Image 1 (cartoon, one colour):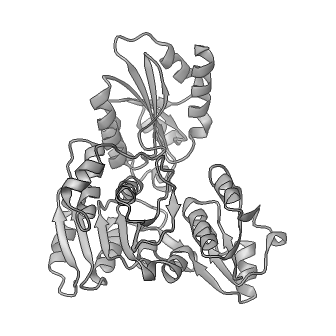
Image 2 (tube, one colour; image 1 turned 60 degrees about the vertical axis):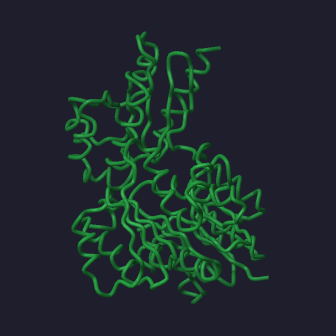
Image 3 (cartoon, one colour; image 1 turned 120 degrees about the horizontal axis):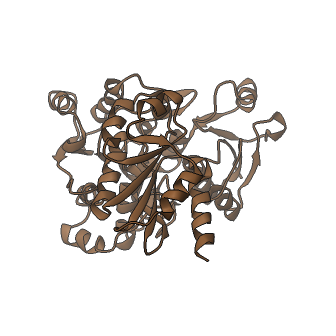
Length: 414
């Protein structure tokens, strides 16, 4: 039995890679700095052995090593693997060579919305009993986060982030998609990209390299006109380009609209509309985590100004009394790259900030203040004429502020 050792097994993507490897009959082991639920529980359920800590004593001799992009070149285990000239690969490369090369690949790309649209497409194909395989970098409620089946279709998120410390190209270069959705392109990942032009260059290279049989679906509402113009003038582009405009009435309809464009390549529109009468959901995507007669608490993964703005708009359509708790969690948010856009997004919303720098607290002081549990408890206890909602937006855990608030609300109501 082929033995595989995964560095960075606790991440959503790499944890799912571990499950796929196990499904293929591999003997799978892994290590990460720390592992938390739900991934730690999922790995145990799959009987995948893992260890915590990148210490040399956690090294395991294996036939192949899959290195996650959280692993740096100075990682002791990685250095040992390289020093001993072991066979190494990145997660995206392993996925293509072992699974995707034999599938029809549906790749969902964009700065935001990837997880939700991937879930919608995977769910629809599953409902139609087409036995799709898929990899969703989130926690869907109706279907597993990843599944390897006999059908020819494979749906996955096509991330523009780099594949590994030795494979610095965007992950999506490995996937060679037959159908590619580009839902939006904005500046993000300030730790590896200097500007939006660099990101667009990667998308341009990806699309230009696709064969004639491939279909590229471009949402003009989320992409700069200059990029679309450049692509139309590129003589080397062989794939079939289709440009559409996603429904922007609200965030839910926008995601459904983009998913529908993908599914129309395989299914008739009437069947798609019938399936989406009941929508699948993903944890941390406008998820209600507490409800009462006077107060709702909503958790959302939005961590880019555009995603935050669209999530706010959806909440404002449902609530007249809204409070935002915004976590400064991503590298781009922490760097201050998005501060100007955030000022515009937050100007009319009562906002509390988590993990903001002193400079950001000062910059946003007219509309936002530092979040504390005491302040949020006070907000929740205020009498209001309209039902109030507290919307948490961020890609981390809010320093457990949300968890502690909900525990207080539950205990206070009993």
